Image 1 (cartoon, helix red, strand yellow):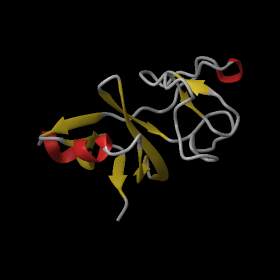
Image 2 (cartoon, helix red, strand yellow; image 1 turned 60 degrees about the vertical axis):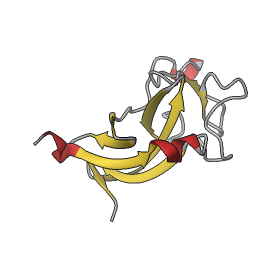
Image 3 (tube, one colour; image 1 turned 90 degrees about the horizontal axis):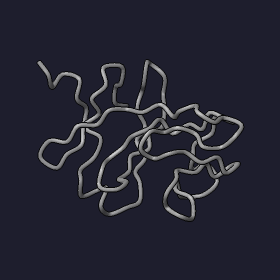
Length: 121
């Protein structure tokens, strides 16, 4: 039963219409916010939590990328992250990573493929 762990996240069309999406789920039995976005034609999902002050990346503005569009950026203190790996590039938290969540695409729908994730009712 390979599909038992797949939970719908969004459609490809939904992602094309915006810079990023936020989904509220439970991960390891804890409620979390997840950011989903496309970067260089690939889709990514991370728990939306900057490790510096434990705030959502978009906590002070409705954006998750820096002005260059090359890095994810926490809007509170400006910490930047590699969008492909989630690795922090800022000195205080250098090398620490955002928690990535696996996505799989089937027929233009993206699914969370995580056994420790449940959707909110």
